[in-house]
Length: 246
Length: 59
Length: 221
Figure 1 (tube, each protein chain N blue to C red):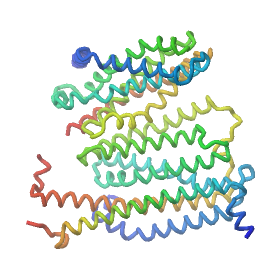
Figure 2: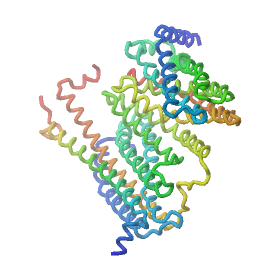
Figure 3: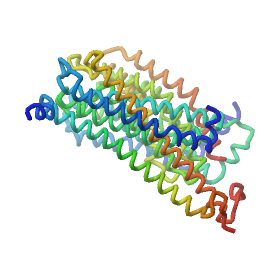
């Protein structure tokens, strides 16, 4: 693990595992799609619409998991000053925001036949919406500074503050929802999950996680190349390493 | 033919299920395309910056 | 402690001299909240139902308005760097500044909120709870806000970025602030909800100066 903190070793490692992870992603998502759309039975209450679950729920897992990963990486970056942890956090953020967006849109598409409207201030969907804003804030702060070190550190602090707040927000939103909720409305996680549903769900989740890893490896590689370019430009500008002291 | 139609309409839920899957995979594909393009652009810039191999440096 | 009081006095003197900070927050609060009757109509029952929410949301936005400048002026004229090398810990500086921000924005908002409550038809029985809820909730805005204000120092985008960073974090304060007032308006016991707000305040008081100090030191590097 510590060896991978070296960017060059990471590049080599990434190159070696990329095809394998990509293979897992394609296979798991393909199998998940086939089973989820063709073979899994419709839910006795929600009918075929339950098939949206196979993209919605794994996306929600990814959205929360990636935010957690960003917070952990940010902590490693602030405490032990691993530069690679910061690169990982930065590379993961847009992917996490993407999964959050998928969760929101598929939730809305699932909500229409279930509740009859495109959006309901359901406790889960509302929490995901707030998570989406946490992601947007993180990405916006990362891009708000000229100086890359400053943006890295500020974003790391923000990620940790946001992460500490996630359970508080979740709990508050759940409480707020039960306060205002008439009990008759169908809960979003309504269907009890049978094994026949669990298989495509887990396949999709595996596929998404592998796809996330592929994206992450590509983006980290890209970021490391960009860093090299910055360093070279400084050298070529004739300023060399002095520029750091200016 | 009927089976294909039944599959596409999904018991009346097709208009929600198909867009859900389409959006999900469109977002993922967009992320992949964007990340790959960025990587290629960066690698090309790096190659132009160091024409004589990794140690190439203009004096 | 004496350093803290000196800093606080300095801050208050500064904001009194500028004086527009508090007045602009209060004016924004009044104007924004008083637009709502025009938006939703003058029916007493509708206004009474949304009064607590309107007051809380506009108070939150009014507090945000002035938060952007919490450290900005000191950062730009270099006095923040002087303070950083002074024999006072950064945490104390943040604490003094947050308290000063609350005294110049949160407190004035609290003072005028009963007037708004009357205009928006909030039941008179809930006005005491509104004041209490704002007494517990608005300092959270100042203290959590200090983290955001420290993080955005020196960034290209100011106010909108700050709002984007802070609003998701402030949702719990909004939820329980409104819920406490609603409980009182419906004749329920607001104490448990006020208790949660108090809990948020304790957390914010304990953690925020520490985190903001970390962010401020980064900004000065």
